[in-house]
Length: 107
Image (cartoon, rainbow, N blue to C red; front, side, top):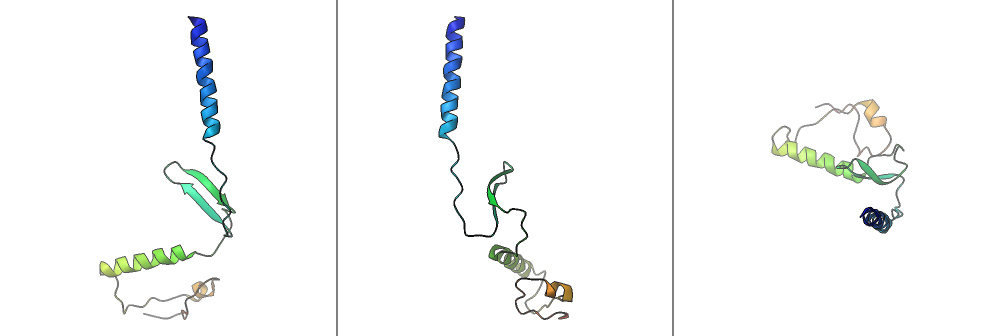
């Protein structure tokens, strides 16, 4: 009986090893981006990435999310279409897209 259990355990270990090799993750594709990060937030696991600590300008998705927040605030009547916001000179001098904003534009 002991020999049978031992053989069964060896077969199970071998089967698990074969299954683990079969489920190896593929290499991430080449992406034409300076830096990127793909993460499974539920597992807290980085799936793929390159230069993840590199400082980069906000991507278009950041601008889209900002637009989403603005339209949400408009819908909730927290802001109005004719409302203006001041832009500091420091913020205006930051590199990247400035969208033709003039510094110190006061509301």
